[in-house]
Length: 317
Image 1 (spheres, rainbow, N blue to C red):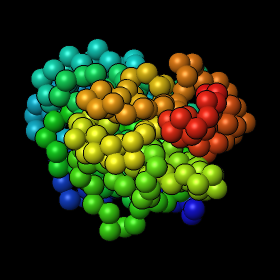
Image 2 (image 1 turned 135 degrees about the vertical axis):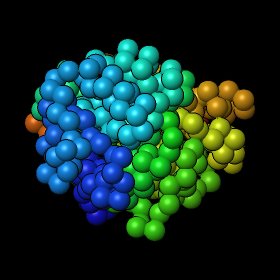
Image 3 (image 1 turned 180 degrees about the vertical axis):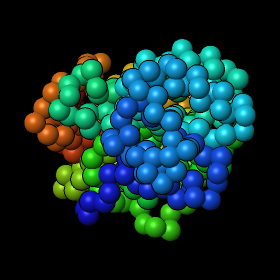
């Protein structure tokens, strides 16, 4: 698979293009603009860029005030900080009143591999998904990222998006159109349905070759919208194959796997999760080292598919 731009870079570029057309778009950052790529707004429109320093709670509260005055504030920091440190302000000042604030969590999952557990977000989807009124997005490549940023700017209400720090494979083409809540089949199959999000979609595609060698035909579905989720579509996709696997760079509790399991409670289909097994992260020399150490691999997904089909019980965590 060909690698494209990192989602955080695609996000920054698309936000700048939107800002050129809409003067109400403003960017707030927690002293990380060169990482979150809001530096592009700072360079082109300094009067619409607000450096809030390492004060995420104040930043979110300020953004809420701007939204009340008709601005479209994009609030930026590492995913672990913007969802964790500022949770109270996100809940009370943004989600509860349903204000038009866009919350952008960069360096999600293990993608900030060098800084260790304190900087790695393994619970952000769970935190944001539990909030009423909050839309939660998780793009898989640069094209989906750009589409989601356009959606965020046009949508009225709070949105959270998690962004990978590193380059990821390009799976979609430039003609892709994002539809809120709709899962997207990226590979057809008949034996097991793999629901994946973010970086794990490309890893699921790599798992397909391993499964085909065993005579198993996997269907791979990108779930870019974690909330709201089209549960009817999820059920229909899983029911077609009769078995389901979820794959996410997030704690197996509270994220994509939990959301899909909640949907599948309405039909008796076996489901096996692949994700971070209720652990914090750690420092590593590179991104792939952490994915391997935590079982976020093609081999783990293939093992989970075999388990879901009842072919072999394996430890894939």
